[in-house]
Length: 415
Ligand code: FAD
Ligand code: PYC
Image 1 (tube, helix red, strand yellow):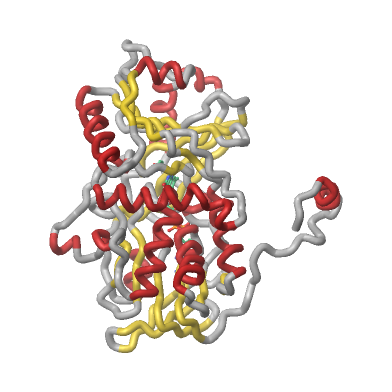
Image 2: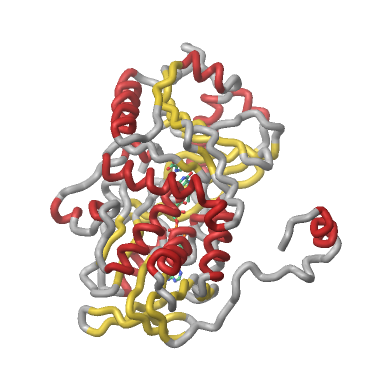
């Protein structure tokens, strides 16, 4: 459809009657070459890259709810690639490079806004860690700089850099290419593009069992019947352990609620993203004007998509410590998602002991930024039946060999 002024007027008065569905709603076939379980951003991206880069022709994405109704549509949309270790930073940087061309690639505006992300330091040890990470990032070709408190105050006039603050701001790392994107547009963009390549996206279709013949996967049981498949890729974020247990596997994952909050819309007051590990909150302003706020996980395990009151209070305290002026802002709503956290705060993108069964999970509090990169490497892993060199370190075996990649510092959200 052409976006002329005439079309805009016609659509405004059409009561949506002539709108075409952005993707089809097919009945599931009896068999597919590849089934992707989970219609979040990662699952849809995987299907898209499988069809586009690997020429796989017979793919279904099975989603128990609706597209993007999981963490993809619940997160605070921060995108950055400033991780400490080479393995992680190269993976997230691959994703960053895909983000930079994503709207053109999908022909869908995902509203990727490279407005910069500041990770604040409040102690001398914070600043040493920041310097170490900035140096490591630069060695890996990732844009990163150390900025002083004076520079932060110049760039973000509302922030409180008083040395009398309980946790005074001493400086920060800044990744200028980092930023935010419109989360549900990412799901819709990948869904439409995958659909156009022939992928069947089947919503309201919960996977309830994983079928095997000996040690080889043969398909899945679903609420819409048995579906056979040569290969099954599971990308179900907070539900990874549940689906793994259907295949007789146990994952080193804990599931926790993670909350987010938005305020009433304000005029533009914050044109970048601010994160603080020490006071432990993060905030950006959406294009609608809402402050988008988050903090750490709720400490208990659970599958309820909400969270506890004490975490709300903690998050608000943290943001007011950084921006006292926001005390006059009214909050509109909150919600939670379920994040699946690995012991080293890094994902699992891996083959499994079951032939033809692959898992992509454990992104914890930080997988939105990885959506295109995760899909890209997972598609490679499934198509070639071996990992790409970028995801090879993120295998399941690392929990036996001890080759962990500890990114708790760069994850920047306490787990
Ligand atoms: P999802 O979007 O959750 O997709 C998984 C899908 O699987 C769901 O739609 C679910 O319904 C489906 N599913 C589950 N079980 C089944 C089944 N049995 N059968 C069929 N379908 C099933 N990351 C960042 O990088 N930056 C951030 O700022 C950020 N903020 C966050 C804030 C919050 C409050 C939360 C909760 C998370 C945040 N994250 C952030 C993490 C990020 O949202 C996730 O890591 C990422 O979205 C995971 O993507 P996904 O596509 O795997 O998950
Ligand atoms: O990974 O950058 C991140 C993040 C921010 C908020 C939640 N996760």
